[in-house]
Amino acid sequence: MHPTELIELIIVGGILLVILLVSIILKGRWRKASQGLAILFLVSFGIFYFVRPYWIDMQIEKKVGYLQIYLEEQYPGETWGFRTVPHREDGYKHLNPYYIGVIFDNERLVEYKYFVSNKNDITQRGWSTSDLHDLKHLEE
Image (cartoon, rainbow, N blue to C red; front, side):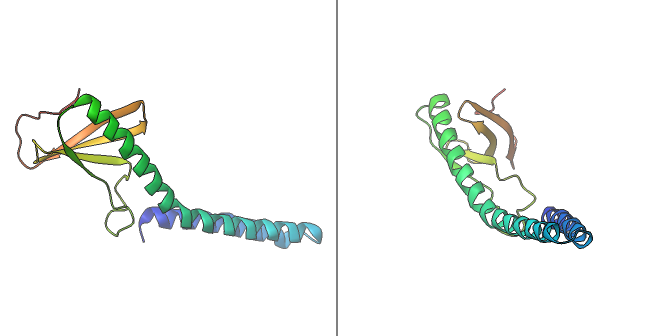
């Protein structure tokens, strides 16, 4: 389990514990209402925890499409490939899944990192390479 997930579970557990402790203090109709709130909170978190990876996948897919259009405008006639973070696999949880790597076919040793906020706000945030040389696609 990644530390971020552990922190999320601790926070949710703490909130749930507070709601349940308050329900012990209350009586009658208010006790049932607060216990219902605790159940609703628990179910809501479960749904969120289940749906979030699929939501991230949908957002990444949409952002790759925006980046494709942007690169076609910036670098016409060139070809490239995309590399995204496999955020569902172990060992990749610490990486931001919203950074999209682009490897141009005429510059295979360099991976440029792009961040896409929306279709009008795309920025190159970095690059990585094993062989330092003149970077052809470096944006200022």
